[in-house]
Length: 131
Image 1 (cartoon, rainbow, N blue to C red):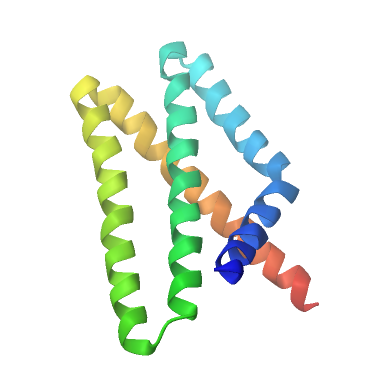
Image 2: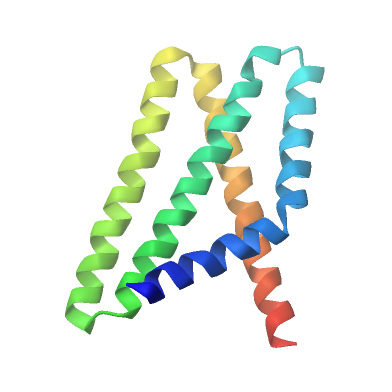
C-alpha cells in the first residue's frame, strides 16, 4: 500500500515541479477565449484541466496497482481502469454537451490540450532523469 502512494507522489511531484507549464497553457487558452469574446467559456478551461488532472491521478494509481499485481490480475486492473477513466471523461463531456455545444467543444479541446501538455511534462521529466 505504501508503494501505491509513493508512485502517485512521484507523478504529482513531476506535475508540481512543472506547474508553470500548466499555468501558461491555461493562460493561453483563456486569453484566446477572451479575445474571441467567449468569456463565459473560460470555466471550460478549468473543467478540462481538472478532468485531465483526475484522469492522470487515476492512471497513476492503476499503473501502480498493476505493477504490484500478478500478470492476470494486472490485466484486469488495467482494463477496469481504462473503462473507469473513459467513463469519467464521457460523463463530464455528456454533461457539457447537454449544457451547450460550445461548452462541450471548449471542454473537450481543453482536456486534449492539457492531456498533451501532461504527456510532454512526463516525457521531459523522464529524459531529465535518464541524462
